[in-house]
Image (cartoon, rainbow, N blue to C red):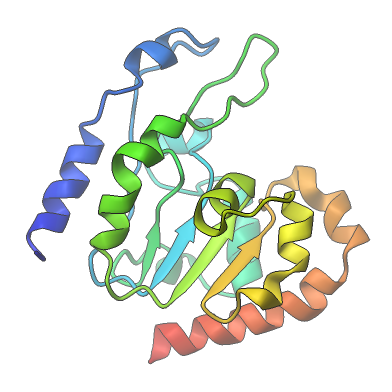
Length: 199
């Protein structure tokens, strides 16, 4: 079984299911699946989909959102990008592109339908899951409400799951309006993360 996981990751990296869909976007780009995981990972970060910068770099969260997320978690880049400790698996592995107005397109649902259950089955040691944004929260928790409502109810899911808002700078106003997020949720999350990483 252990040998099957790298093969699965290789198959996902070679995936071209959405080639025609991406070619039809305003960015007219090619698929570039970004999969960041090793079978022995203990922490799962489930996000939305790579942005344009991640599409270029081939490494998740290589943007301002990644810097903010690492700040929330209280870990350095080396720990964050250690695949043997932290798996970073968004709901779609490719940059979805922009529409004609320059807005982000949603992650194609076919990506999660095709790959997600297989990937999660291949990660038996996950002890902490971070659900970043609404797409991940709806899939993992079947959360009926919006992101704010789901994050406010974080204690229902802790200590094994923590729903988080997206660390985009677009959410700065929400963070200012909800000081409990930094005062209450983040200290609990950081403590749990250190327990899992250092156990």
